[in-house]
Amino acid sequence: MKIYTRTGDAGQTGVIGGRVDKDDARVEAYGTTDELNCYVGQAMSFMDPAKYPDLLPDLLQVQHELFDCGSDLALLKQELRPYKVTATMVDALEAWIDKYDAETPDITRFILPGGGSVSSTLHVCRTVCRRAERRVVTLARTQEINPEVRRYLNRLSDLFFTIARTANHREGIADVEYVRSAEVFRRKS
Image (cartoon, rainbow, N blue to C red; front, top):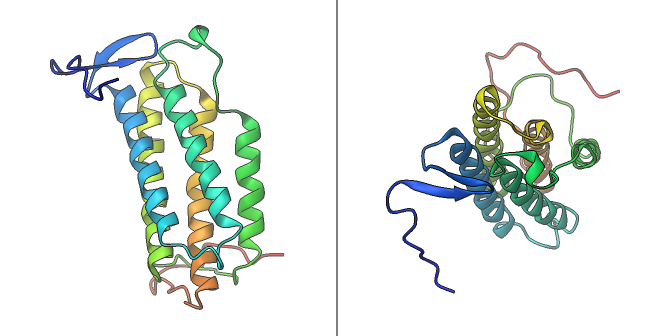
């Protein structure tokens, strides 16, 4: 099989159930999800398996689930096949958020993105994830989508925030609070 097909040379691409322009909102949504997946892989490449034996397999699962998101976003009509992204996947993200958040010290103010290379890259993942979510919101205004994809991306950005903090904590790097921030977070109970 050849990688190139030449079928997109006129500015259209194939999706599940038809063809659309390459700048279609659907392509923007799943393309941004694909971009996010690349950054997740980059973050994983910076992780020492000895320090991140739990996080690496979790992020590998996220990568597979991001492909599921892209697949659902590439689907023009649900009747073509069942959706892949489910509420159970969102529930799993919430459990991971709680687990990794328990490792980190309390914060009450916004923090600056940064720290070590792992944390910094996970903050990039967080912001690209937010952009992917915005693209899905735009798409959903005019076309059918799996609403669980939107929920998944919303929760996933929270996971990236949490694990960026976890990474800094494991590396012995303190979060830097935004100095002009009001107190916006509640302390853990």
